[in-house]
Length: 390
Image (cartoon, rainbow, N blue to C red; front, side, top):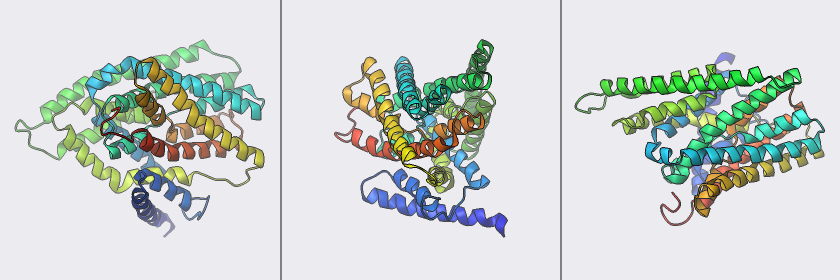
């Protein structure tokens, strides 16, 4: 019966996440906060009754992909075009500020320059999955601030991959290889060219697939979801995070007349199973065994730095691009969450011997902290008149 334990684990996660999500709403917090706390409670920090199995891990990853696909479907292309340069400036400063501050904090605790730079690289990551869920819940995803966050997150992902590739290359050989950097840039350019060309063809295919009378057919969301998964898979082949491919798939289809219908069907799959598993899986990764006083202090400092550097960096970028003070604050807070992106970077660093084991748990806790505070900060940032700053 051991091979069927994952069924009980999933049932427990769904029940606890939903219960705590309802409680979160009762105290005027986003439901996602409850889902994250469920993972922490069920994991090694407290009850330790669920171990993240391969099945749960894979379903959680699928949850991230679906969330970003939904975000792409809700993208306003007109607003995205307007915020293209702004998104780049926001992402650039949102990478540089955490990189520098994070590296300084790491170097103070461990006089290893390569490890310090890698620690800063972890802080550059941004995962807007939770931001997307929170903004959707508040009805604030569309508009200047929400579109800027999504656009900047995509560029942030690209810059983060460049950094990770560069640091991994240096760490492996002790020197910078221009050939490696050029190869990474070539792969990225090739992926986006492929995504653009295939996107045009896919869009035409869906226009042909849609019934002339605009009748809603279930084949439409099925093919749309298949396209999302294929592009997510292809993006990974090119060394780019799968969530970028999933988001781009949603962007390609967001202008279809039945994009709302596609979104409504995908959303059912999302909230019934895979999204709660994703949020809970983050909490399940936290482990505080064997942490010394110095490491605990480091955890606190790096968590504070992670929150402040994104707010300062992305907020400054938004101000440079003439966003209002309120919008700059909203954008900065929306980019705080590190989520699965930072965990992926940290895992790769461990495998490449770029980070000491004792710093892994603090980084995971930092991810959880930024994940927990992001919806709370967004709730505060968007509080006020309906539609203000959006």
